[in-house]
Structures are given as C-alpha cells and as structure tokens.
Length: 407
Image (cartoon, rainbow, N blue to C red):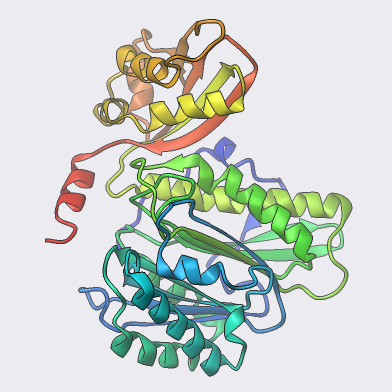
C-alpha cells in the first residue's frame, strides 16, 4: 500500500487540546485489547484479508451501521446481536457477502460461531463484517480455518496487522492511537478503519473500530457513538454511493467508576475527533483523490436544507471535476445549489461562494484550489441553518480503478 498525505488542517478535526497522538499506536494500544490477522486467499494479491479484534476483559459497546435498504448478510446478523455487549469482531476483506440471501446469512453466522468457539465466548457477543465485491459469498473453506489461525494468534502487538487486513482499495490503512489526558489520569483510544470508495454517508463503504480503556456506562457509550457517527462518518462523501456493509463499532473496557461530568464531555469530544480523523482520511484516500475539501454551507433555512445543499455540491460530478482541474467555476457550484433548492419555499438564496475566504473571482482562488485541502464556503443568506461536509475530487485514477474493479 502507498501512503496518502496526512491531514494538514487541524481546524477540520476540532480535537481537544488534551488529546494527543500515540506514536506507533494502533487499535490494540488501549489495555485489554488484542488482535490478529492472516491471509486466506480472498484477496488476489495474497495480502492479509482476515482479522479478529477482541476485548480480553468485559466491555460495553455500541454499533452504528448502514441505512442501505439492502444491507449485507453480516449487517443483518449483527442486528440480531446485543450491540451493547459486543466483545469481539471478525472481519474479512475481498468478498462483501452482500446480496447473497439466506446462504450468505448462514455463512456470516458460521463465521461468528467459529470465532466465538475458538475464543471461548458467546457467539451473541461476536460481530461479523465483510467488505469487497458485492454479490459473492465468502469462501468458508478458506475463511473458517483462517479464523482458527487468527484466534490462536491474538495479541496486543497485532493491531496494525488487523488494520491492514480489513483494507480493500485503500491506499493505506486508517488507524492509530490517542491519549486523552484527563485530570484523574489518561485514557487511551485506538482506531482501525478502512474506506476509500463507495463512500456516501449515511454511512459509507467503510468499516471502523474504536477501542478505549475508559470506563463508560452503556448508555453513555451509546450516546457518544451516535454523536461521533453523526459528526464524522456521516459527513463525508467520495462518490455519493452508499454501501450495504458500513459498520462502526466502539468498545470500552475500562474498570472502575465510569466517567461523569466534564470528563465525560471531554471523552465524547475525543471520540468525535478520532472518528473524524479516520473519516477525513477516507476522503483524502478517495480511490485516487488528489484534493479534499470541506463544503461549509451557512445561511440555510435549517440544518436539513444546509445538508442538502452541501451534499449537492460535494457530490456533483461537475463540481468534483472542477476541483480536480483546479477551476474556480462559479457556474458549477451555483447550479448544484439551485438544484438542491429546487421548489423549496422561503426567501430566494443570496448566494456567496468563497474558497478559504477568497471570492472565486479573485486570481488567488486558483492558488487555493492547488492546495490538497481547502474550504468551499457557501452562504445562502436566507436563514441560520449550517452544515459541513468533507468531499473529494473526481480523478482519472478513480474512473480507471472502478472501470477495472472486476476485470
């Protein structure tokens, strides 16, 4: 895998000052988590393609998944589990096990049961995720022995391997660890995520797993996870396409008194920032993306209208081509705004568009568009609603990759 450039705009993350990266960290950096990965031939390259992640002590959890009306078999299976009590997840890459009917659901169930048996825990506490080609069942003759191998090799040192195993068209894994320095002592957060194409919240063709050794109640973790998804993975778009496999799972296995008050608020802010850090990396990866933009819409009648406008801009093929071509084209943005506001009541929009504060007519606007990251600011002047969305450009590499995906 090649590496895409790191996120340069710290203002995009909104990270609390007491949150700091842990060099060389991974999803298993928080205490009480272990992972393993192996290759079983689902990826033609022979690369790692199956991973297992578990909490080695009791954890509380929460899960958010796709809103696609045709969810994958693993998503359907996971919805029968107690999403507040997940202790482990088994993931395969290369085959999505989506649009596979009852046989695919049976395959996902067998994966969960096999992993649970090998780890000595209840299958009801094991989630399953699959990513890759839609319409193909997983090859259990390869996957089940690989689960045996991975479950026998679980270790805190294998967090990076797990992250690599879950990737498909990613240029690089999206993972790491962070330390939140609370007054009563630090807590750690780990992340492993994948996603580069078929990205259109809610949510995206993305898988993300956040771990923490913070002590949280199940109710608080549910609220934190829902907020984090809404403010990160549900605010990105690469190509406007919604996957049937999207899953975010958060597990917290801290011991002792749960966080409360200001510490709980700080923890919530930290989880949002770490999820946004992973989400923006998906946009920057973007199956060949060269530019990532934050579309900031203000002055809408309400937030839903602002979101509709932001998505119309960020997902417009014409706007995305202009971003790729570094062309400050007013017409393409105004067309997208007008389309989003078609037949809506209220004061007509008094449209203002700037790039990092510069009008598109400013000669320096072309210089802004040469940057790998910048803001597209759209003011409608007809209300107080606002919304921000991160989106990528549309490149030759994206077309080539997806034209040749199966050939």
